[in-house]
Image (cartoon, rainbow, N blue to C red; front, side, top):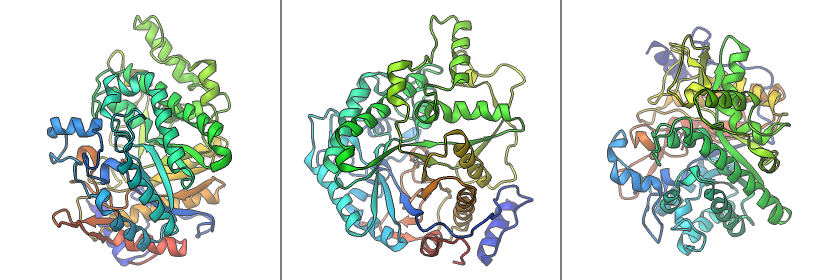
Length: 496
Ligand code: BGC
C-alpha cells in the first residue's frame, strides 16, 4: 500500500522515481531517446472489443458458447456479447488512435465472423467487409494494421473434434490463414499467428481455467502446443510459398513470457525453457525441435509413470524442418516476472506440467512491488532481463512488443499505469541501448474492454468507456495524455 502511494505521489509531481528500496524499477542507461525507426502502437483483440457476437452472420465461438452457459466463470458474471461495440463503433477507436498519434494498431480477426462454421466454405461477406473497412480506415489515417490471425475465439465447430488437441486443426487453421492473406494481405504486412500459446494451452487444455475447459494435465497442454506449433509453422510456409513474393509481409507468433528470476542460473534456464522454450526453441533456435531438457524430462517422467511413450515427444524431422525458422520476428507480450527455486519435495499431480517443470514459485516473490487489480506485479526489471535473454539465446531476433499493460479498477487519473508504461519503456530503451533488436511497442490496451475471466471489473485501457451510454464514448485517461507525449517526443519524462 505504501509503495503504491509513493508511486502515485511521485507520478503526481512528475519527477524521477527512486525505487531502489522497492526493488521494482529500472534505472536509465544510455541514450534517453528512442531511435527514429522505433514504432509505437496500441493493441486489442476481437472478442474483447467487438461485441456483435451474433450480428451480420457471425458464428459462435467457444467463448460465446461457454460464457452463455456458465456466467459464473467470470468475476462480474458478464460476457462479451456487446462489449465496447467496436464492431459498430470502430470510428471511436480510430479517433482515439489518431489522438494518441500511434504508428500501428494491433487488432485480431474473429475467425467465426468471417467463417461462421470455421470451415472456409462458409464465407461471411459482411464480416469481411467489416475488416476491410477497419484496415482501409487505419491506412487512410497513416496507421499500420498489425493483425492477429487468432486470439482464442475458436469457431464452435472446430472444438467439436477437439480443437487444438486434434491435429485436424492444422489444416483448417492454414486454410483460414490462407483466406486472410488473400483477402487482406495486399494491405496487411505484419501478421501474428496464434496469441499466447502458454495461456491458451495450459489454461484451456491442462487445468480447465478457460474455454474449451479441458481437464487433461500433462497431456492436453502438450497436444495443444504440438498442434499449435504445426499450425503456426505450416502457415508460415504457406505464406512463403504463395504470398511472400508479392505481398512482402512478415509473420511472427505472440508469446507471453514471465521472465524467471532465480539465484541459480540453471534454475532460470530450466524455468525459461518450460515457460518460453517450448514455443521459442522449435521456431527460433539453431537446432530446432523442443528444448532438450523438456524432451528428456518429460520422456523420463512418462516412462516412470508407466506410459508407453512420452507425453511430449520430439516434433520429428519433418515438422522440425517446417517449424524451425518460421518467424520473421518474435512478438512479445510481457506483464510481469516470476521468481522460482528448486522444490524441496515432489510437486504436481501425476502426470502434470507442474511435475514435469519441477520448480516452485519463491514464497513472497516481489511482495515489495506494487500489485495491480489482477495478479500482476510491477516488475520492469523482468522485461529488461527477458529482452537480453532473447538477444543472447535466439541470435538477437527482431522483437516487436505486442502487449504490456497494467490493470486497475477504473478512473481517469491512472498514475500507476503511467509509471508502469514509463518503467517498462525504460526497460525497452535500456535493452535497445544494450544492443537488443526491439523495434516496436504496443501497450495493452487501447480502450477498457472485456478482460476474459475478470469481465469488465479490471481495466487495462488508456481510454475509459462509458458502458451505460448508447454510444459508449471513449474518454482519454491521464495515461493516454502521457503516452501521446512519449510518442511525440520519443522520450519518457513528462508531466501530465
Ligand atoms: C491477453 C489479452 C489480455 C491481457 C491482460 C494477455 O494475456 O493476450 O487478451 O487482455 O493478457 O490480461
